[in-house]
Image (cartoon, rainbow, N blue to C red; front, side):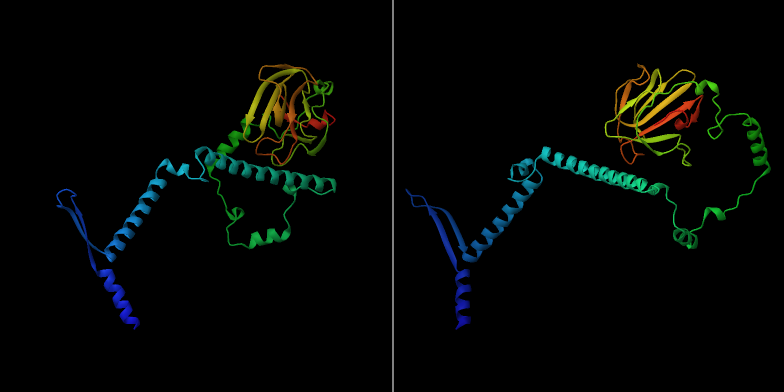
Length: 296
């Protein structure tokens, strides 16, 4: 019974139907179409699929997609990208701020900052036992040409000054008054093995940075590592440097007085872990320890 009903159903789908269009006045056949239900379903389905594909391509490769409700336009997509970059920068700044706070808390408790802590002996043993070859195992042979060149360089550099040489400025600087550029706590002192030629002073945000002596601004601008930097040339071949500022108040060529505001404390540049001032004092091209002449 069920098979007979199914056969009747398929027979109906295959039955041909004639659609004729006549001229109303002459009764002449204008158009004759012979179709079955199956043909009608096939043509309608294929047309629907083709229409959907054409509409999808039209929306995907033309500007019509911006008229779809909820689809972002070009300006909104640009803002999304910029906001993503800003969020990423905020995460980096938050990590730096948290690291700075942790270091400050450790300093208050009497511990060393994370950057200056010595690695535990276990890490050293693990590294020494690793299969990676160490540079200490490499042996270099010294040739006669190399020995002669070394002797020549040592002879020429015997009486030259270097950064590692001990500085004796004499009574000239001992009788010179230096104005304190910033009142705060010194967290990194002069003479760091990594080449720290100044002191790092921590103070409140946007604190005033003052010129330590009368002089002329020889540089006022931005560097990638130290951010906003200002350098002042003083008398007697003295130069003072102020790095990682948030804002510079003087331009190159300006004359400044001792104690005059020249910048605000900031956290600019890549080599910084929080708001502070990196202050350097140079005499005749040699760095001096600012704490020997200035009380912070």
